[in-house]
Image: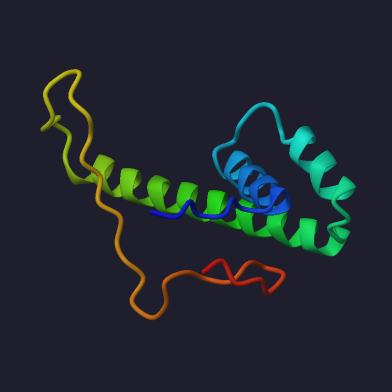
Length: 108
């Protein structure tokens, strides 16, 4: 079986930067930013990656908080044994897989 070509280092840096932002990684991506700039990636493309990652992070947090609030209002008695994970369902969006960022970037 032939070996698959590796992703370009700028793609790896963009994916890593976006994942770090979405995951709220404490290192904040200086290495990825440096690699992208050294690779000649235009600042507007880096800004788009940052905007999309922040949008997905914030949207996920809002949906989680809404689902948690709904769960918290549903009952006073805990239905989950102590130490067991909560099974919080997040409603699917009917019309689209995701909403665009405030700047109009698609995250899908």
